[in-house]
Length: 394
Image (tube, rainbow, N blue to C red; front, side, top):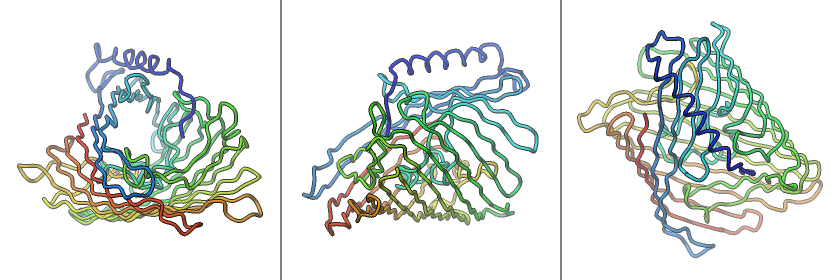
């Protein structure tokens, strides 16, 4: 959950972007000591809902989900990236803002604000995922963009990354505390288009005075029916008593690919405790993807994640079908007491993607979601949704 945002942060980020563009006026060659390259993404989403009569209904809606603009390049021996999300013109949000330097085969050091290393689902860019939304585990448990320092190492068949970070980001300074995270993957290279990926992610966070004066609370509230379906969210965990809270997170990763077919699954979890109460959640998903037109997903062995697909093999572009079952469950109780809340969410999503070009696609997802209060034995919400996206990135 986001904490207090500073209105001047967006102006500062805009200034940084403008300054980062200056090298592009004088240096374009690959061998220049200072280079700059402009990049970004635009995601325009919509959601339409068939609600049941339990709870407030979701309203059909549209949104500019992402409008990123960034600059990346080389600054002598360093690489840099500065990105901002302009989807809300009143509050520009900083994304990646960092410097990195490679130390030969030993690895790469990154300092600044960057997405932390946790789970295959979260590490795969929103530009390349087969469905509009990540699974409930990655969406609620991944540390996302934080200020810190990290080290990455990769060889021909494995990757390893570790980072230490603050709970603060450039835009959200009310959250206090620290975290450490690590991720390791193994994917032996193969001569054909097949892939086997195995991975594990671990993280520990110490969050200060959660829910206290001026501090954000810590809630785990998945969105099983899509991003604009706020009325279908379910609170599995709510820590807001103002006490320091320890959070341990983990994820086990598996993926395979053979030609146009790929499938992946993850099992994620977290344990929370503040000295007076405890909470625990787990999540799992299974995803199947098939390129009807014969293309294959691409995989980056240096970062252990899926990336942009290659050129389409058909003049009309590429078409992909995807199917995912996603679930998350958990509970919370005071020490020595019975559960005060326990619930489970489930969703089944069928998606279709038309890649007009590798960087331009239209997405459509059909979702059936189900929320259940397992403590009371009651179904709280059942929603059908149609969600879609126009996506362009450069």
